[in-house]
Amino acid sequence: MAAILWVRLKRMRTDVSMYVIMMVMALMLSFIFGNALFGGESVQRLGVVNNDNSQVTEAFLENISGYALQTTDETKAQTAVEKGETLAAIVIPDGFGENLKEGNAALTLIQTAESADIMALKNEIVSAANSTAHVYSLYASLKETLAGTGADALSVDDVQQAYAGETGENAAVKVSLSVLGADAYDEQYQANIHYLMGFNIFFVLFSIVFTIGAILEDKKFGTWNRIRISPVSGTAVLAGNFLPAFLVGAAQMAIVLFAGQLLFGIDLGASAGPIYLVFVVFALTSTCFGLLISTLFSTYEQLNAGTPVIIVATSMLGGCMWPLSIVGSDVLLGIANAMPQKWALEAAESLAVSGGGIDTVSTHILILLGMALVFFGISVLLYNKKQRA
Image (cartoon, rainbow, N blue to C red; front, top):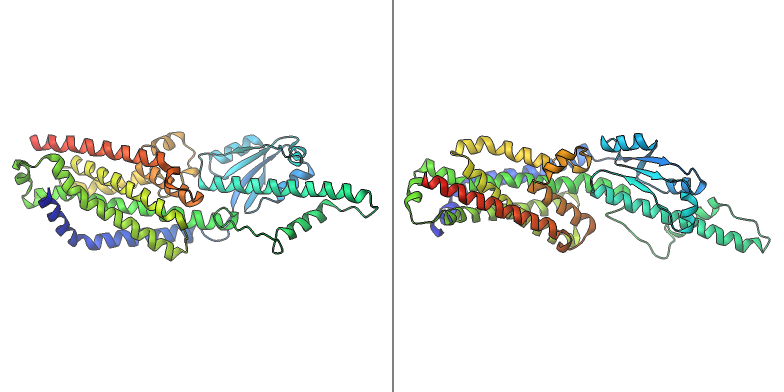
């Protein structure tokens, strides 16, 4: 196995230009998709089914910032969400305003799959509800206090303005939500982070598959027959080809992730480490996937022709080109679960948004490792079968 590994590492020197191109393409398309197509001042649409129409509810809706609110009925709202015409829809029940003042209000959010955008929306809704409830609680207290003094009563608008001032520039404590703030969040996250992660995953597959596809080049160089009659097991041969491809994948993902943060002004903070660990696991799974592809094809020419089709198709289904939150088909979402790209991208997005540790995406990692084991096992079976043929 050591001899095979040495030959593969030496041959990789001729592929340096390919690796550079893959990294440049990942960064370039991240910029194009993240900024040129989805940047700017655009806001996401949010449907509103208002069954209450109270003053408190109107104040609550006014406090939701960063979204284009569209009043509609529940049937139309559900259809719009299913078609991806709106991010989600809020269904406000009758009596919501009174319940909000008492601190026990509830509403329904119509959505498709859970996503980072939905998480941001939920945070904005909670923030708007808390702000509205505090204003009316403060108003009730002031009204009761002033009633016994003979002073002029304040209006809700007066209290709202005073409350906004206290929570603005003159507040004793200032809270900055760099990730979940509605305006910056939508632009920075969806426009840059999603596509940086997605295209990093997409292009590393090409580097890994074509590196490990050197197995098929052995037929061109006449070493295939010598390997077949050698005492080296099929597992050892595959392992010797495995390690260089895995190292290439892990290195490429690290470079693109680091360069993307610098070029696009993205600060992942403490999440960068866990995100890269997810990428290392994905590189492992992708290398096993590349082994499987290499054993399925008979020649290097077939690999060159078939690999782009396979990688593009699986990456599209896995959400690398667009968020799965805009996909309304349950069939496509079900198929996406069979794609390793989906689990890696979803884990990276979750870590980028929540800032949690690697334990928060342990399920995704276990699924990727399980896929890697399945891919490698099938590859060994197919390779041994071809050796005996």
